[in-house]
Length: 143
Image (cartoon, rainbow, N blue to C red; front, top):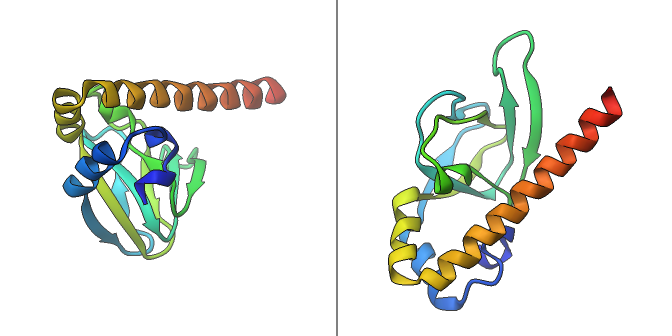
């Protein structure tokens, strides 16, 4: 499953096995909140089955759905780079199977396989750049 995750692309089998061995499987019922904007968090999540939605201002009149994610998609990657509060709320749309990894697991990857960790960081930077470009285009189209 990890081989198809864009930010893990290019990692060798040993690094993928290391991450998979530390992954925690969990279930989230439809409509349950998985992570909440503003809360501290240190887990990266991969959607195994089901779907989730990513929202800003969850439950408020100005709520905005930023994304809908399905199998193979991920969220919480910013916790790998920084220890700031969650930037959005993620809610299960359907019954969902998730696999998660703590930020400490990624630190241990850095200690054990620094070259593989470097590939991961470059992939995260590329993904964040892609998302920022998308937001720039959406903002420019709106204004």
